[in-house]
Length: 195
Image (cartoon, rainbow, N blue to C red; front, side, top):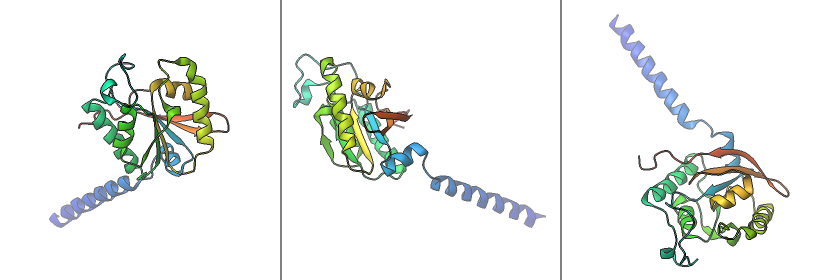
C-alpha cells in the first residue's frame, strides 16, 4: 500500500513538473509572435513620467528642462524590455522621440540601439504639426526593414497614429499597411514593475 501511495505522489510530482516545463515553453501570443516576425510594430508610449506636457523653459537637448521618467517609470521600462525578451525578442530596431523621457524608456528596454527620430517628437504644444508627423511615421514604416520594430513616442502621437489613448508604458500593436496602420491589439504596461 505504501508503495502505491509513494508511486502516486511521484507520478503527480512528475506530471506537475512536466506541466510547468511545458507552460514555460509555450509559444507567445499572436501579438508577440507578430512583433517577433516583424509583421506587426510596437507603438509604445514612454514609461511613467509624472505630470503633463513640459515646463515653459523646455529645451530639446537639455533633460533638466523636461518632464522625465520617475524611478517607477525606469523600473517599468526595464520590465517592458524583459517582456520583449521573454517572448523571444532579444533585439529589435528601436526608434524614439528625441524627448528625454522617450529616449530613456527606449534605452532601458535593452533590446537594441536607439535611433532618435524627429517624426516621433511630441506635437502636444503644436497641433498643426500632427498631420505631417503622423504621415512621416507611416512613410517610415513603409520603408523600414523587416524584423522586430519598436517606436517609443508620446500619447498625442500614439493617438494620432492609432486612435488609441494609451497609458504610460502601454504598447499599441499595429500592422503597417500601405498608407495607414491597422490596430491589432494592445499590451498593457506591467502592473507592478518593482515587484
